[in-house]
Image 1 (tube, one colour):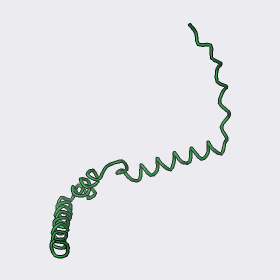
Image 2 (tube, helix red, strand yellow; image 1 turned 180 degrees about the vertical axis):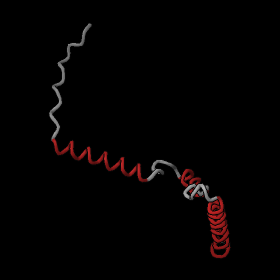
Image 3 (cartoon, rainbow, N blue to C red; image 1 turned 30 degrees about the horizontal axis):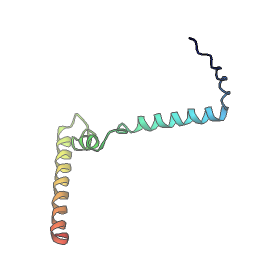
Image 4 (cartoon, helix red, strand yellow; image 1 turned 135 degrees about the vertical axis):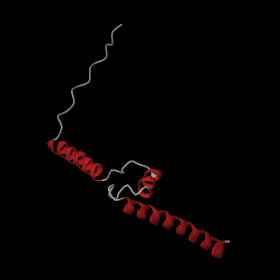
Length: 91
């Protein structure tokens, strides 16, 4: 058996302004993606990127080590402060 339903009419021609807006939006999304390599990564992906100090010069191991130590120390101090404030004012 063949399908005897009438065919849908061809789509209407697109408005040039809509085409222009869509092209501009796609360009903006691509530019934002290119400028920020972290779009779409979750919290853990960003944290891994941050704590590994991958934003430093790979040829300078001392700078890389210093940033890693500083970032981990800041995290430990933040957790310690949060625990202190919790126990002092909320417990």
